[in-house]
Length: 196
Image 1 (tube, rainbow, N blue to C red):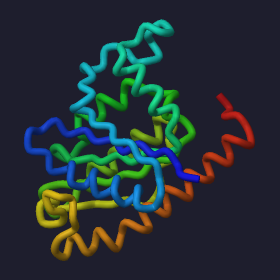
Image 2 (image 1 turned 60 degrees about the vertical axis):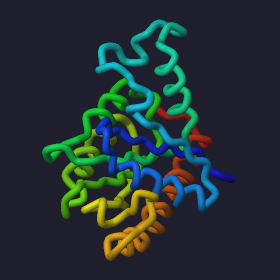
Image 3 (image 1 turned 90 degrees about the horizontal axis):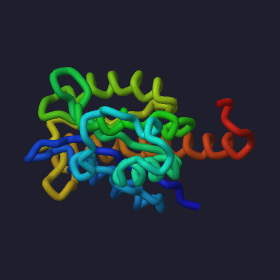
Image 4 (image 1 turned 60 degrees about the horizontal axis):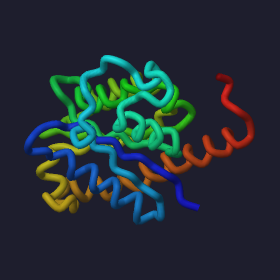
């Protein structure tokens, strides 16, 4: 039985390089038989956070927010595709995620980071780890870091060069780790209700 996985991406740039990594992860998970849905913060276009989803009276949240809340609640796990902006978290992805809280609870999340430079978004991945944990998700230990992204993935999201070979070698463990935690969390949720 396949798992429902949301791949969330947050770049608002006009020349979005991280979409290459998002597509690579989506294709990799789908090739394993998983049901993967792409969540693009730019396409959804939520305003800067004023009111969280839970702060709207039932049935009055904007349509995009209501739809996304359902997608998050129905997912078994998540992958955050994050670029690094000035040593930190991508603002578009952070804004999207902050609109929700309880919807994220009790599901695993994996982080795939990227940058134009050699550090592969590692500082953004580190910052996301604490943030996502605080939001009630279990952050898996395996990560992917891609950089320089233009020398690792082609415009068609195909691995290229030595960086692409390294990415292909690291993806199976990344996916295995996420899927192990998804199965563990599903079993635990089926066994007993979360404590709150």
